[in-house]
Amino acid sequence: MSAGNDQLRNELERKFEPPIDVLLDPSLLVASRSLDRLTDSNVFSSQTQATLGGTPTQPRLGELYVPAAFYRLLTDETESTVQKSNLWDFYRGQAEPAFPEDVGELLDQNGVEGFSGKVHADLQWGNAINDPDRRERLLMALQEELSFLTNGGVLLSRSPAALTALRDAGLPTVDVGKAELTPELRETLTGIGYRTPADVCSFAVSSAQSTVDALTGSILRTTPDTILYHLGD
Image 1 (cartoon, one colour):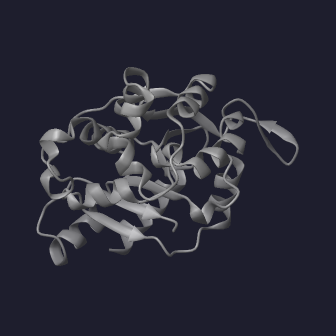
Image 2 (cartoon, rainbow, N blue to C red; image 1 turned 90 degrees about the vertical axis):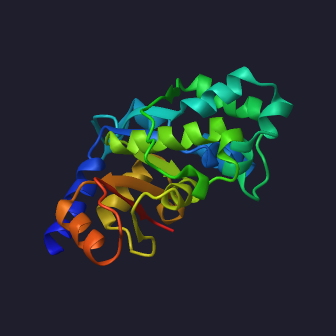
Image 3 (spheres, rainbow, N blue to C red; image 1 turned 120 degrees about the vertical axis):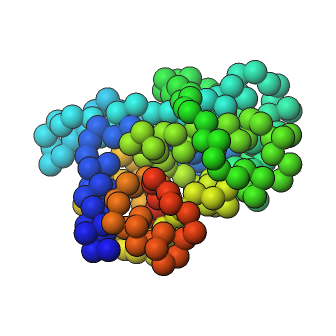
């Protein structure tokens, strides 16, 4: 188990080596307060210029994305339709809603594109989303987030709603939510624009085989290829 935990730690360190490809979870965008914080942050400027000790360095961020299903919702629907959609409601939760045109303008101004990925047909979406046949766009967004993580990217989020849905759909998860962030990781998150990194949910996929084996042997009744872990509050 310790070897797997060491591999988890090493994988996390590699994920935060710049430039970092990042997917913005829609929960950051559909809530008014978090959209304002994101707009005022250094996230977008971190793509083009970063400094460390006053010396220019390579950009902290690589490419910025949102789920393609979310991007299509903004471009294909009217404002009233967007705010009434299952996808918008799921990611907003109880937060005060943002205006869809403000979200679209922010993404367009900063060249944020939609990310499409493969479908994970083996997950049991009916356990996570009520009436999945009528929530096709939401399910696609969740699958695109999982595909982005599986391909080595990092997801920044306001809420754990997506992680909870993936867990309920059957993806094995490990929650390290209350663990203190290392100074290096805190510095990295602050450097890419987050002033209070402890409030950020960061998700990543691991293939640490010994940890997976230990979990499947004593806790889980499945044999997963990956486990999903969650850092921060």
